[in-house]
Length: 221
Image (cartoon, rainbow, N blue to C red):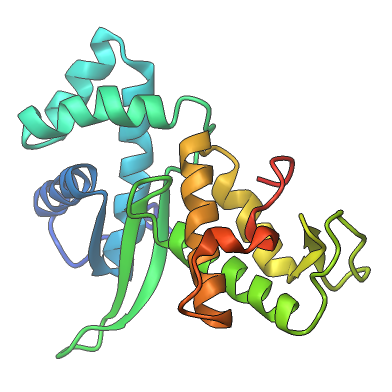
């Protein structure tokens, strides 16, 4: 029977492991994203989700519990109970995201970047904007983005944005997930980033606002 496998031991004693995870969570709250091994990232994500839930709760018990868990109280506690509590007020969970990032030199341990979602340096936000801009440019170059009205895409193979631009199903899914809990300011920033990528593919010298097909409908975003 499998006993004693509730969590990863990480090759450390319980006191060392707890101290290390508290330090990783504190660094994650302070910087928004950190790089570590995959095993540590997964355990850090579990603890960070609970800490951010304390920040959303915001009562005296939550503050004392978070204070006992985190380091650098003058930095992490204001971030937790102000910025992150407001950012994730409408998000039911899933405050962290992990990106695999090669292997470590020496012992070849798998690396990962763990980040807080919907932040200013969100990796998926930038990657999705790049994918939308690239696929928009491809649709224009192939003559598939000529209509000013939304049209139906090919069933089961693509989706359509404003201007009849076709997006791949994966890009469409990432677009919806990335912008679901974003503010209008962030959505406008996304449009600008996607426009810059599209123009860079079609003609690097042209200004993004000269292309009307890259500004997506408010219903989609």
